Amino acid sequence: MTVDPTARGAATLTQRPSSGRRSVWPGRPYPLGAQFDGYGTNFAVYSGVGERVELCLFEPGEPRSDEASPRETRIELARGIGQIWHAYLPLVGPGTRYGFRVHGPWDPARGLRCNANKLLVDPYARAISEGLHWGPALRGDDGNGGPSTEDSAPHTFRSVVVQPHFDWGNDRRLEIPWNETVIYEAHVKGLTMRHPDVPEHLRGTYAGLAHPAVIKHLKRLGVTAVELLPIHAFIHDGFLLDKGLQNYWGYHSIGYFAPHPGYASVHGASGAVAEVKHMIRTLHQHGIEVILDVVYNHTGEGNHEGPTLSLRGLDNLTYYRLVGDDLTYYMDYTGTGNTLQMRSPHTLQLVMDSLRYWIPDYWRG
Image (cartoon, rainbow, N blue to C red; front, side, top):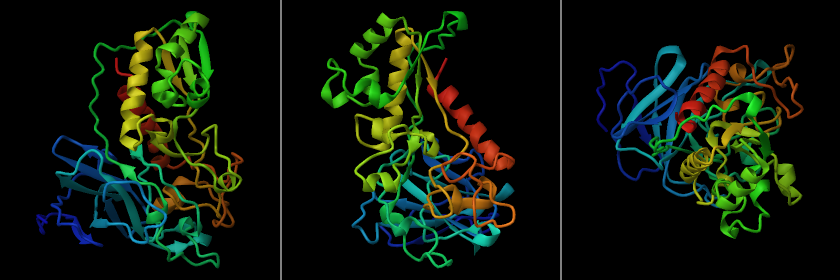
């Protein structure tokens, strides 16, 4: 490890277990998320209640529910301006799987739910892997009011560093006048899953939506824009999986910056990013705009009995609206178990940063 010990808030490295030592620099507090610059990656995450925050790096591959102790390297992040925790890792790039662990107070009655035994998804992750395995390990509490001591890493998602560059060619915004716009609301999977002219391996995928047979169908209808039901990364509820069902509609987001990996024809979270961009570029080439249905009023973490996957473990008080006289519980204006706290500047920033990310990064023009 090469870190200047005199640097303010210098990052440190701990390993459990180690596959080799890594160089760690303090990095910078903005922009948030994992930003690859061609040489290395800067990691930055907000936690106003955290006392220590660790960046956890994993060996390639999806998490396995039967793996009791996945290979993990933990890096202590530096606390910077505005309670942003950060570090820069040279030679760490696209495809790297990571998550965070927040050490801090556990007191649900005061709205505090930090538990370092829970691996947390980066709210700003540009890609999120599949691999959520429902079970008690995902809960922050032990069922008796105390913090759970079971490690959730073998059972939960990984955040993934992505390659930010994509060849958009001469793509541009179409800017079709509203009085000439014909919008076709569609579900990525539903639109393509049973289309007889779409190759079977592309059905239900972003690539399937960009297939010539689908574009021909849309053009024949006179469509000028497709409005896609949510494609932000979302979770399948445990009670549905127990019945052999899945969350079809996607209104249970776990990441506001990452496309849902389950709709990618190429397995792997990073592949979903390129495939969505390819889909948009192809639709634009045929005069069809793309509109996204987004869900910013709640997340898939549910109520006080739900899993600790991301925001709850990072800073529960900041990100969620809690019941005023008992902060153990969540205000449920959405019917899904929780409601985001839009009065918080950090939550509002999360939403606005998400919008600012999707527009220039996925609609270049």
